Image 1 (cartoon, helix red, strand yellow):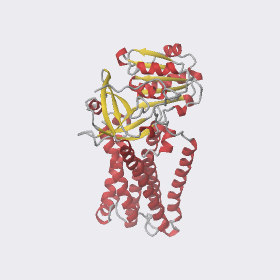
Image 2 (cartoon, helix red, strand yellow; image 1 turned 180 degrees about the horizontal axis):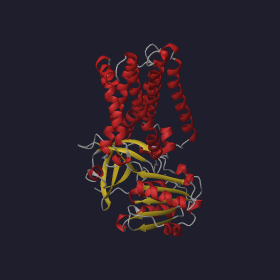
Image 3 (cartoon, one colour; image 1 turned 180 degrees about the vertical axis):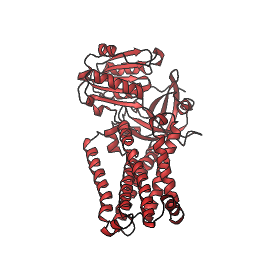
Image 4 (cartoon, one colour; image 1 turned 90 degrees about the vertical axis):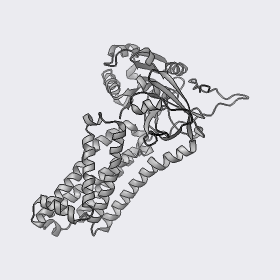
Length: 463
């Protein structure tokens, strides 16, 4: 089979008797106001969810034995459940929000928010147990047993809480880093089960629900809307996009030791709006791989009818990708990511790639204007690990830019070398892509060199 070529040079201009090859459009421009609107709506929803608990409470209920604890327990339960729904919405990757925050931003907010719903829901369970024990004049352990045996949905609700706490524990950074991505994904998938059983429990027994139709209506809308968003963006849209483009692998070729490019062929790729630097979740429909999706950045903008990703062997899944054969069908979810030319604020840019981070840099270069004068730094442990270097050099040349190679051990970034290569870094937008450690180290170096935080754009490859 003949090799499929990706031409790094700009497409030939239209002229007499010739037409340019079709090109996929760039992804939509991110709008910061969409994030502001979403934030206002989220805070408003939190206020309503807690406010309904407050207004539904009567003086008599508060004065009754265990009344105050019941009220506080209900309020913490409502707040915790609402914040859990917000976490699910963050994970659903709503396009207008994801384009602004990107994967790193969504994960950052997800991790900041995560302790709150788990803590509040756990407090809800403890407070109501003590409140009911106070009202029944029994001990909390006896009352907990009574709740499990005598009240509907309490066993499933307890299981849901245990699942949430378990997810919180494995989310601790030291534990998370030791888990395989597939295990991490399955554990987080169980969060949907936990929330579903929690909703059934609240509707049936929640003090703020029983006899309060407005509260039931609000929460029914909130749950239905959240489920609808998840089904739309994480299920329906990927299926529609996959059926529209019908991608199949046509070539797998080695780019460097442990690095392969996978070229897919499909239909209507000129309609696939994607920006350079973005990634898809890829699901290869073969045995032992079809049930899981992994993120890989496009290493080139779509060149209809072809699409290319470049993968480094960094685990069982990526090693299996290298063994795929032509003809394998592919499902895609995305595109995702804010590591795009849309983030650029200054006329000139610098692009810094650590290892396989070159894939995002290479595709992003295609979206830069002809005279953006990009300074590209490629970091690798050895020369044979400089993947796609020739294509990067060609793209940079067409934009009046230069490519610099930094070779050596992974540990430490030579501050003086970076300054020597690109002395005007502080006057540029700087894009950094690579492993989490490389991105964190490089971001610190750039800050020391006086590059404003707003001018640093990064994509970290992580779990």
